[in-house]
Length: 347
Image 1 (tube, one colour):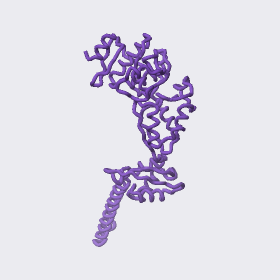
Image 2 (cartoon, rainbow, N blue to C red; image 1 turned 135 degrees about the vertical axis):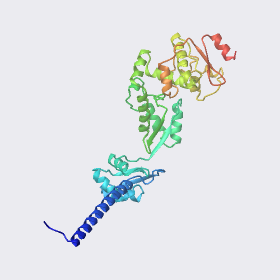
Image 3 (tube, one colour; image 1 turned 45 degrees about the vertical axis):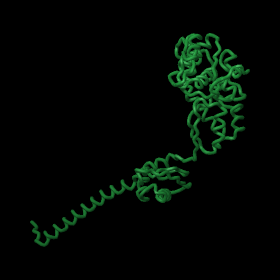
Image 4 (cartoon, rainbow, N blue to C red; image 1 turned 120 degrees about the vertical axis):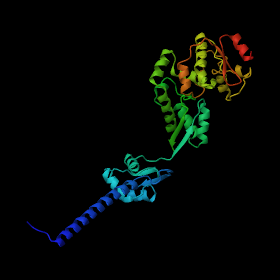
């Protein structure tokens, strides 16, 4: 049996202690490195993210991409980004282009965006309120510098738009009145007049579901008639809860062959929204004047929103045939003309 001298035992203990220290140091450094790595791939500014637009050139290496991101303060460490790219198998998959990134994004989110090619486009926003007439839509888009008026109107009148709801509407003056859905839109700067119109018509197509088409047929109406009625409801009703009731009144009058007598249709002819119409106003000669012509006007008078479309399709069942607006904005509803006169006189 071998015996170790005291010196040899002491040396062995020193070696073991050194190994233990080295192992502990390696573990410490490894843990520290992992912590540092995870911190370094985190967001540069998690609290107040700043939007930064960057350009990734075609054929850029991961090294080049990391450099661009670091220079724009979007990542904390080039090497950590490159390691993450390798671990994520993103190398060679990140796409060239112009991107908008936030300093609150972490490196993984940035890599995902670069792989997806979520390219940033300068965009413009515009809002079309419910009840806007075509001319108001055109005025707004022109004032924002988004359209050429003549080009836009030529497309409105004669554009070749393939939608089910336009199939039976012939080309001609103001063909798209009522079908340019009121909403807030975001478009790429420099979008063409056709692209803008298509976006608005796509939105109408999205809102006017198959159920709406079926309901239109059940009511024995055309789509244009539904939209026309909805546009009148949009202009007459101020409160959401009153739309189905007002729709019910109009349906009742249509079924009885009565004049609709809608001030909104006369205002459309006049080209202005007068608070009170004169006898001369309601005597104006126009197919849109529902004080003189039985039935609906020939086309919509404004762009109705979803609530008015639904009201036109699903009216309240009511015995009312008349309504008049009160001072507080609500309407008073009446079954007979005598009741209506009393309501008008405030009795």
